[in-house]
Image: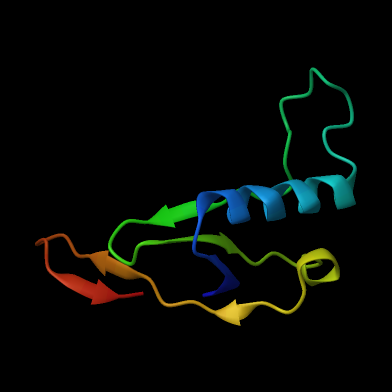
Length: 80
């Protein structure tokens, strides 16, 4: 998956806010949509990440390839 990887939740929050500011979100304070993208946490890999969407490189730079460790339906761990 293409995206952006962070060591701390605060770094992920900061980039989420940069992306929202770039898109002018929220348009109104009462809007449901507050952010353009959101971050996630990979517990098995112990890092935060934002999945790439088209145009995000304009504010966050070029995305990197991120590999996530995911358990399968039998509880076995593999990479996604």
